[in-house]
Amino acid sequence: MKYKRYENATPLSKEQKVALLKEYIEHYRQLSGSDIGALNRKLPRETLTSFLEEVGVMLQQYAQELAARPGPVQEFLEQNPLPDTMSNSLPKEFRIFCLVLNALKQWVSAEQQATDRYLMGGRARATCRLAANECMITGKSFDGQELNLHHPLRDGRPPIPIIKKGHDIIEGQVQTAKPNKKKVLRN
Image (cartoon, rainbow, N blue to C red):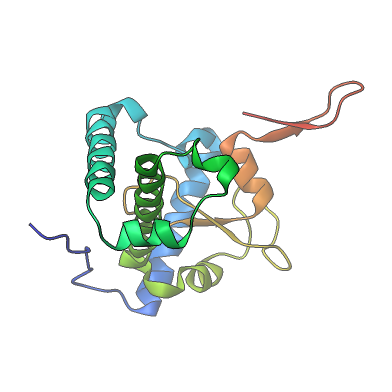
């Protein structure tokens, strides 16, 4: 089976997107009043442990295969040699694993961006600005503020617009001062 990116078969009009977002934002505004945690649900990592283990093994096996045969990856490493002081510390297979891992990270990032476009299209930030004019967490206007897009869940639903301070509150990262110490971020 070849990978095929999900595409929305019934895209929404701009007006439908704005209306959907307004209703969606109001839903989370009401939820946040009684349960701020509803804005930041995460699937427990152990739920997908076996899948992540399989991916890790696949990455290592693929790196071993690439390390054992000539090709573009080997050529890349030859064109970008390590400094002598480092060459004994970074085995070729590990370097290839790092390259493969980075390629996976870039792929995941692109696919996550594509999932964001599934419902809202490529202008989610602008659409969010049309759907709300203030942060639901802080009540502050978006005027002059950097708009953050926060995903209450990563299950395909669109992000909600908030400001950085609102995002910090949702994530539980509140600055507190301790006597004679610098301010620190707390989870």
